[in-house]
Length: 416
Image (cartoon, rainbow, N blue to C red; front, side, top):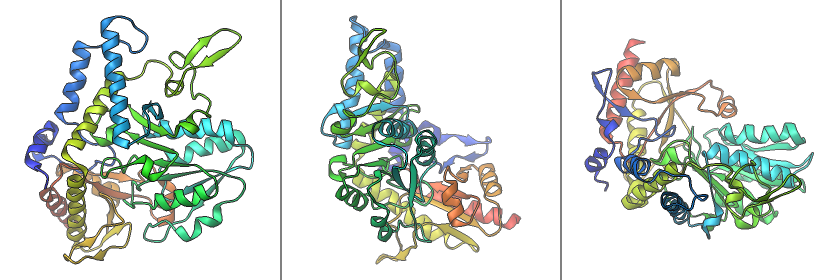
């Protein structure tokens, strides 16, 4: 069991009053998580005491900043259980990581008529990146369909592969439905066809442990700000055998060995993909965030968030006119919904109340949820809706906050 009271003290923002009246109930964690003191203080300390550009300097501060930056890379390597730190590329986030793979892999290995396989639940970052390649090179996008309750149709996956299939790009967890996708099985099928797989881990890494060697994915992306770290930094893991074969994503300093007007030779991994000055302070913040969740333990985090999700599903289902999107829930032996196919995300609509109206009024009661299409318009069209309200949980949320959400929805419902 998590020491919630102590954990919440690490996040000062959770003590805020909204509109100087209501205690903050922050349920927008799938968009971004709040930051613990340990992360903010580590970054402030580096700015105040160690700030210097990394890798290029021979002076003391530069050496110290470089050591911190590379120690952060090693922290990420351990967190993902990558084979070597050279497989860890720092990016600005999941979006840039996916764009990097789409651009570089497409340049090296795809030509007109070649195909990428996606799913119907993908975030725009894992759709538009490939559409840009489609416009440049004429590739084709094929899509794994889902069931009405948001589960990937595994029975349709095999038939999508052919001799033109070059890569699969799939989200680990849907940011709308909370669906935990069967990525291991998709990877197994893809590898049987000799096809690499990119996994979008933005919504999985904050909630349960990820072992990239055990998954056997070829690429894996996640964002720092969704796992209690700073904004503007993320990670691309890539198997060394693939990163070695990809061309650079951007040109500039740091990613080179030698430059002349006739020819440039590129740096070793992972620096080949890290042009320019990295956000070396954010990498420290990311490392502290990963240390923070690791010190708490994912067994405890996952158990807590699954309990919250089950409790929320149970309570919200009591509301007349409530429609919850995502996997069909069955009642487990404890009388609670079985959330084995759902992560800590619940998207919903209530009767004929527009999701934007619901979200706006919840905000006036101090409750922060996300409204809209959640950067997943194709999924919304598949569901036949324009958007939803989305409540998403983190390790610092409580059952009392779920109760506050329920009471607020009931109060708003009375207004309509």
